[in-house]
Image (tube, rainbow, N blue to C red; front, side, top):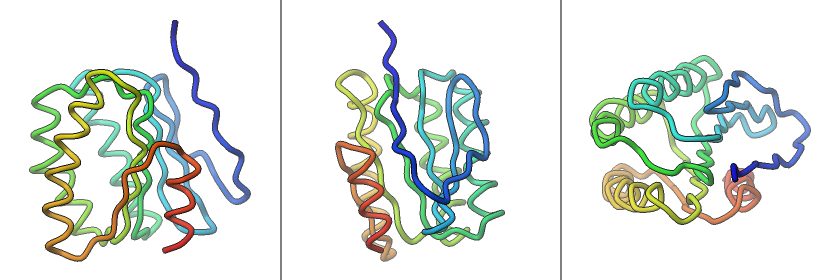
Length: 147
């Protein structure tokens, strides 16, 4: 059975991109790029989609992003390395100051996310980025709204 994500309607939220793997939204009120994974993506697709998130962050001049990983089942190992060495440093260089992540449901994605979380926490603490990892989309949105 495939999970379905129910998005809470937010005034001022525009859908910037959507396909079978991900939806990317822009919260105009908080100038936040928000993205939700819908299902597993191959390494190539994963990188392509996160590059879109990066492009939207730069285009909107946002200093914050919210990653909804609720349905993320796994991250290919080479994609994890790419996230750490390529994508995340570009996000920081683009001016990211606040990060909210919705933890995945139980499964391979949660193990991969736990590893990424530990690495991110170490790096972000050193450069003053404020982040949180929560269990619901609303808690992540509340964090973004409070910063």
